[in-house]
Length: 293
Image 1 (spheres, rainbow, N blue to C red):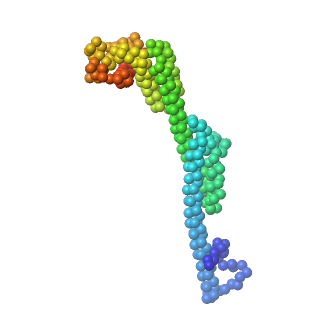
Image 2: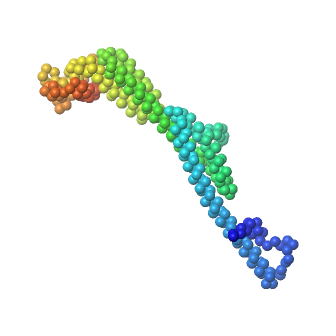
Image 3: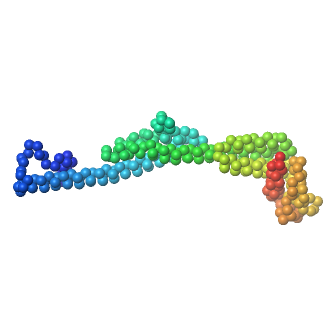
């Protein structure tokens, strides 16, 4: 059986109040003094053991708290709207930076208070002092997740809209310049609203290329042979055409002889292959014309 010596006993050493007093030089007095020192040493050792145990338990509690925070952040992100709105506020609340106080608690505050109650009493004050520092670190992490979710939402929305616009161009009348320009400009206006500068630049470059390709597809669908001749993708009159071709009222350079298709080869291509080849080789030329506009 293990007997625990109360800390107060060791701290008091020997009670010198109404207890019997022994001369310091006597054997009994020396023995009693030694016994008091022994009790004090036991109490000190007990305190050291308790501090070590509290530190160990506190570390486990902190690790458990960090794990619950990570899980809570994942759940908040999973349950947030597609654009990520409200993620940061739901998790870490609102803080008045001027006053330095929380004006609206979040899930973080609830989890922190729960963890604080599980902390050993000797470690609670130190843990409580870390609350706002941990909030700042977590809030920054959550803000990045919310921004990433917003960027993904904007990209997905723009991609869907521009794909629909490109299909409309490809199925439309290639000679209807006004409609084409309206659709193309509508896409550029939407892209201009993207918040991420790098994503905005990439989307604009992709849309200019894709809208040009869609226009080529419309030309091929309307009159494949004439479109191929205009864009310099197939021979005209039995020879390779690599001079300038008129597109939308402007002159653009044709493709080089190395990339042109001979009349014999073009006769062996299916209609779909001819369209794909013409679209691929001509999109760059159309894009240059559109950029001039």
